[in-house]
Image (cartoon, rainbow, N blue to C red; front, side):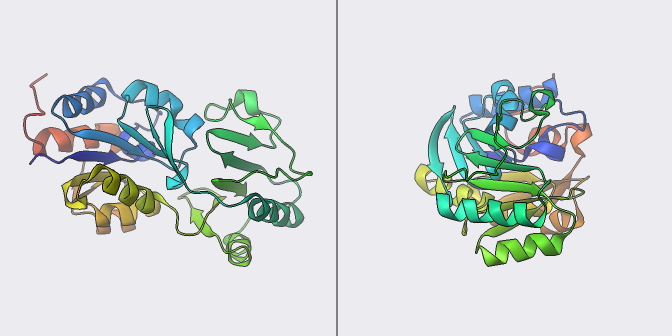
Length: 260
């Protein structure tokens, strides 16, 4: 087979558990591009949290911030955001419920964070400090907060009519604009490029990858994926630590494997 696009999540999918991208994976993705196959990342990470991998992989497009942003080589081509008043209401609700909670807010490629340890963060060392006691008053693509229980997150999302995104093994909750997410971004990008979804191969591991695995022509889950993702996928590949994405591409995409 020769798809027109390879679409992959980063954490626990393309990346190994230590956060690295193997040389094999980089070589296989570059080979896809040489064959005219677009390489696209689709990640929950903020753009600044994905930047190092964008530099390493050099994808054709970057879907970041849980699908609310699309960039092409660093140039923004798509943004789904909530207006400033809506964002400030969510932040106020979060602060009223838990005044000491950590909050991050993405406005395009800029991220605001009320942490005293920004410089020490591997993912968000480029964030800007903001304590959120005063309104941020910016349209926001995504708001993330650390909360003790899911019920609180559900209530805040419901009251503010926004989408709630959860992540496996974490007590961080993301509040997104209505009708946003990875799938919406993928459909927007595919339509703009005149690529049918059937011609896309997607790779994922988490619950927020389920729809992506279902709508693309071939959905592939790594073996370390959560049960929902494995069930939604058309096939299962090796784990992220075994270069599952690269291995599947080598075995299934025409002319990629070069024997090295």
